[in-house]
Image (tube, rainbow, N blue to C red; front, top):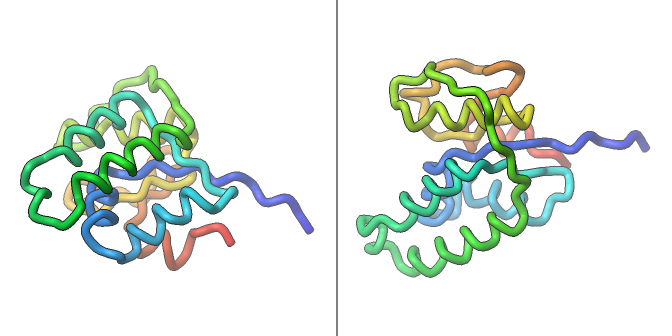
Length: 144
């Protein structure tokens, strides 16, 4: 049996929010990140900071257990993610905060950047990283 390559992924914050609110594709992907040994979650300090800030917003407190679950998720992510420090700044996306995802994807040579934001991420690919929705990743790219 041929050795399958490790798949590197970058997950946009909106995917984490979706995963914590509903049990859809984003949720299934997160479960896979923790159990599938062929997936490596890539993270930068800047992206982790955004995860913490966004998941801590009051507007999500209306969802049952959101605060508790998001805190546990952040601890788990910190424990399993491979950390990278992007050296190159990018200015391609109109929502300036989202450029950090491209910087990380480039730095870690990610196979996929998973995002629910198709308003800002209009390209299908960035330097070899495929930019996909949670649905597209789950149905077509998840390593078996």
